[in-house]
Length: 147
Image (cartoon, one colour):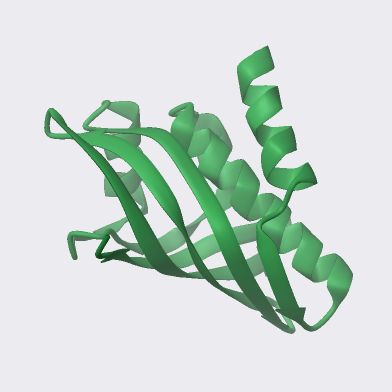
């Protein structure tokens, strides 16, 4: 893990966005840590880390409404078809119900896809499931917020 990756990770974990929660506070922290690790792994195109952080049955719907599964999502990251420069949440609400957690958030994304640079605000819904290796993303849906 290089110094930039470590710095990003610490930023996600140590300086959380405005967070509200419902449920077990330790579980809420663990979900937010998993989310921060996932965002950092996406920025670094770290598919090894992403393999641990996303579930085999992932449903991923991006801000263009394109829905993919785990294999397609990982392929888009590893091939460089989508490059994330920054994913910065500024508000997150976490609800934990047994082994399921729902994160409702908003934030800013800087990315490049199909040769085009994009900077936009988004609102998102992320659903996590507690697995043997920790919290894993099972569903994501994001919507661009007009600026």
